Length: 492
View (cartoon, rainbow, N blue to C red):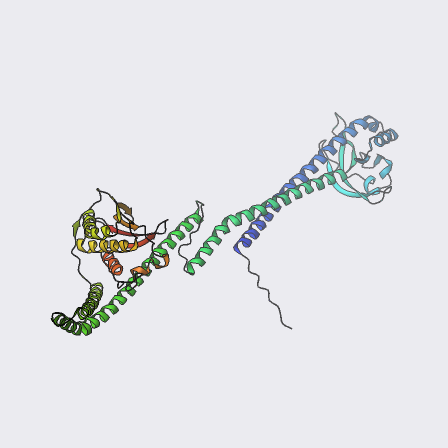
């Protein structure tokens, strides 16, 4: 027969609740026990004091009859004082023998048989004992506090006898039980409130810890953007802040690694393109040059008709396109050195606009400018940056329809790396699909029917050489906006 093993693992919250409840039960039980003992002793002392007063009262009430040896009178007085609380009263003479007693215990020799007091006693001495006696009328037994007090006569130092009384403790026990019940209810209420407090405390402590655990799990899965929202100003709050800072740094590191990998892939891609370009340039340029020269010589012949000259012209245009493609590909793959100088960026923009004016006039395009005059100069290669702006302008001109609109803005902004200038060139053309925003900067990717797809790729390479960024942003009217950010002079 296989033995079934139960592996029950308690959570931190459950352990905390159990520990707090056990501590509360122990402390509550200890405190209630001390209170109960104190209350019981207080009730018992009160009962003893009450018994002393009753004994003294009975002695004073029967002193004259007792001294005169009038047994029957003393007995009658005793019977009149007997009630539910005072069960019996017994007078003993100076020899310790029975003098008078009520009928209820007249035959109980353990009570009336002899006195329990010593012979040499003072007036203030009392004898106390708790016992139980049989109730012949009702059956069962009665709890009794038995008190015996000596009888002295004023002016005499000799004891005349003693009085033994029995007080019922049923009311006292009932009061003690009631007190214990109240203390028990108080204890249970305190434990119940303690359990509620323990649950609240455990949630207060383990709730943030659970958030931290969830955060570590998400980070282990690569979600470095997860943030733990804990507003407490204690050690757990400090831990959450440290955790958020750690995840923030991990996210920054992840982005840096992704950017580095992207640049590495781009560099490998450029190296591959460079090798291919060198091979193409070597294998095509020499025979292409011969073909181009021969076509030029044929075109100079006087024996060609108009149709033949047209075919040669088409061939020359095709050769020129091939040469331009090879040139652009070599320029893209070649790592050129920058001629860095301090330039006012607004002047570079104005010179670029002048070079594109004919294209704007051809399609009657409106150019809106928002160029701030107080923009600081930048450390750039002016020709390279002008090449980038011209490329973006040409793309904008091709994107807009007749009577379209192009807008260029220049502003200074602040970033974590310092002061920067932001150039935005937008148009009201059909726009670029969002899924192509990154692809348009890849080599040989183009959405136009003509072109080689190297213009924007070369533009991004130039901007990144200047420690800047270029990207496409969408607008509400679904048109596109190119955003170029370059660091100001003296910024990194």
